[in-house]
Image (tube, rainbow, N blue to C red):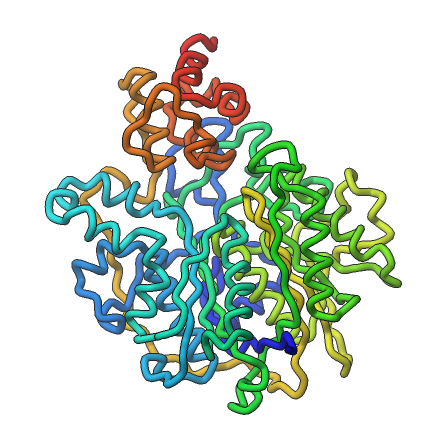
Length: 525
């Protein structure tokens, strides 16, 4: 069976780009939409980095279109709202002017990030907590109900599955949806991811050894790389079997030729660390599946971290060691930030648009290849300006997404022949209104735990909010409860200055249990 899956529709909203036309313009530009948010936050100390890739309209929603009352819309997680609207746009892009009337079997594969709206807004609002029961709030905020609610709203009858494996979630969704199409489980697949983090206009506290950037910029593949920066966003793709898309005379952005998925297991230094062997294997397996030996470029995960990027570059250099010319590496993250569960779909959409527009993409902020992988400089290259390719033969590209926890996925794509050269799509005008809980103890500024709390209660409260665990015991392990280095950075950001100044990510790693961490803080000068 031929592994030919058409990308027939795309919808997206990322920092500085609320549709596919503006997103293509952005990735061809030298502009980063990671912005300085200093005006929205009070002084947080010397280690506070006021930068983020911001969605300015995160709270806007067309409640009427999707059948929500204003009360329900106010409770609904903004990640879900944005996914519904972006998926609607993607279906319009695929030629379905009224997505609710599609007479095919449609599957939905959806991913989203941590339910921060629940923890930072709803949970701190006594009026909301007293008015609505827990199940009602859960149904409108839990990750488990994103895909199934969209299927319900659209009356879709195919598989409806949430895909959650960290940063690689939404690209894993592409892999699973392609398989479902090949197995005839659905005729159309709606696939994507959504991520909104809080505060909407908030930076982070930098700590040496964390995954966060020390200056608010992402330097993918570069010798200046110090870490990553959060960015919010949502992307959705509509997939069909290639023969079906051709029969329906669809516009085809790109064709999926093969994909693969692996997990690192414990062959690495820690749970959140990347693993080299399975990064190599996942690309090799995808290439075998696609029956393609060479690629024009690879859209890499490339978060700009000191450890992650060199491992990924090494893996790709090994896979393509026999390539006659240099492999072009690129990453969308310096343009928009790292959008967590929407990371994979952001990279996928960028790649589809580059193939559609026939460009070899550049990478923002790049000047010199990371010195830790100097041996790979003869096998890979990173462009500082994009190149328009005037060629008639098909272009090929790969997309890698690596989830914290070890789930790796790679998708191989090929440009489609005979496609129209424009992207404009007639969209329905959304009737957008802002829905946000206003009477809460948090807003667009950083939420702080009161400094007058003693250390024990303060640490318990912070861990509880970040980890989403209501009751903690003294021997609970931060990482066993789902914490990671990014969660540790979030905790540090919520600590008052008297603690923040003396704690770093390394303290979470060396003292991971609650009682040991508290004791360590009390004894630390």
